[in-house]
Length: 120
Image (cartoon, rainbow, N blue to C red; front, side):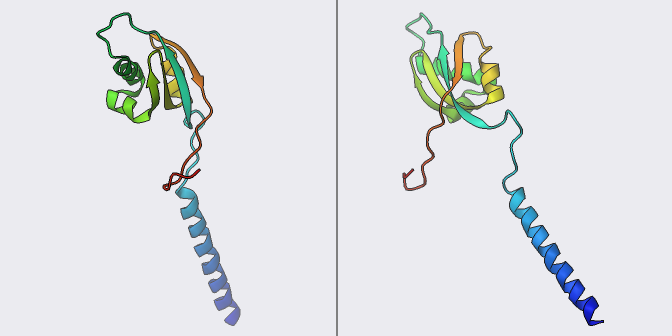
């Protein structure tokens, strides 16, 4: 009888460890290939009109892939005349490269991540 009680305790402990391990793994599921986010530099055709704001033009080009200007603003890293950088998945970058007005989409080295105190 004592052996059976010890076995139940061991099995319960192993089960608790297994459940804990699953809970930890479930918090950070691996992203499917093509869904990892990287920094991309995008070169665009500069519109001839002086009435077009280049920054707004960049947001609208990116919005064609992301669905809205707000979404484009949320992933934009840098923007200037003729070029901008944004955090995109490989699939988004590929689709963006086919948008009229986009000349080139190239992956850049991801910037270092800073902690909440601003340290690397």
